[in-house]
Length: 408
Length: 148
Image (tube, rainbow over all chains, first blue to last red; front, side, top):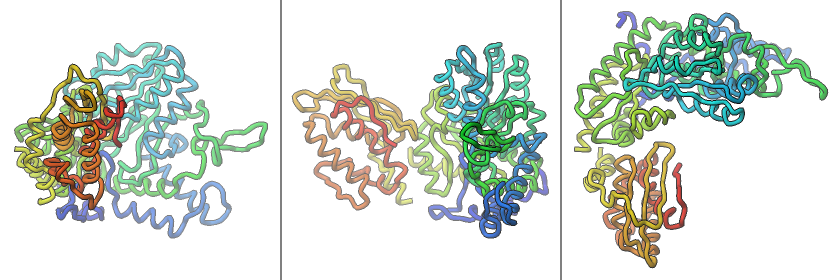
């Protein structure tokens, strides 16, 4: 752990962490579901509504220009954050789910047809399964699934076997939300490209934990949600390579995505506006920009070092408790400790931990195929952020001891 | 921690570890499957109803301690009872779990009163009532039911 990362001063930036829940210090270990927001993000949103609120790209008045500057400024921050080459490759969406659906509707409907293959993995979130199933049902394409092994790693040999000239898209998670596995994204992209297939990476669980360079990854689409990256809910990002986005039809028709409208012919707007029909979530974009500023102020060197140490500490702590089994033991993981207990169902674990102020997620984590793969109905999942501490892990361990006490 | 002790009473934990009527029923004539999509709990409830009386009952599936104990205790309470009586127990149980100040009809509910603590845990109410809605669906001739 780097010495100049002061987790206590970081925690001071997050007002919600000072709360008590059920008479105990809040131990927030549900960051995989959503992350908490630093004061600077909350302030940026409040400031926008107190001083700037206006619609973007329209008015000639001063505040409208300021709102547009704030909104477009946030786009540039996202572009730098992902190391994309152009601002117009950054599309604001509502969330990861909308990003995937946009690509399925716009790219998929135009380019994927009967007999074509779409490849996903066995560890996708439902949001990276269902849009493709819907497309396959509509267009007669086939959904192919890359299996995972007992540790939660993608079986790369099987992936290689599934790739063929029929492969028209590979859509795979960068980090598994249920298991924490970091996938070899760059290699996945290279292999798909050798068959001419573009790749969408679901970065929802990756961006809060590691630096992402879309040019280095060479992925064709990258999607994530602002709210898991310490920004507000309701704002998400689709990165797409310019040549793909240019060739794709719009997703939502309406205001802002057009150049001119007559009843005879409508001209669509340029990128990125072609994909941003209707008034966008302006304060959300500005809040996301502030969140990126905050993450950059800490730096991923420090974030990753702190979280890796915490993940290792937590893994060892859980492994040392008899009757607790970690689900997802890949060599490279980020932020996720999914586990089951011999004597208690995850829901009972969740309720007993909550009584002690410890927030975790229990259930299938919107990844039922993962549960089926491991033949379990659900897991208890503690998911980390940079503001978590060893004390949080110690509280989790103490909480699990209490579960054992109740059930024995 | 009194809330937790009220929730996980000894009798509930005992039913969880040794559920009654946890079996498939070869000669069942009314079967329903219950599923809670939110958490993945699922139950198959099989009834053998003869002349308006629940002659035998069996359940299978997976779920948390609360859903399992609730299912186990339910099967005990309805086995050998008339369908009409089982529906009365359903109503009494439903009131106890859902209504904040619901009256507890001890005559009808007996040991099921143990589950009244669930009332204070809104996120767990669905766990407790899954088996009951499945039983109701089986009696009504519905093959599937979900609680959300």
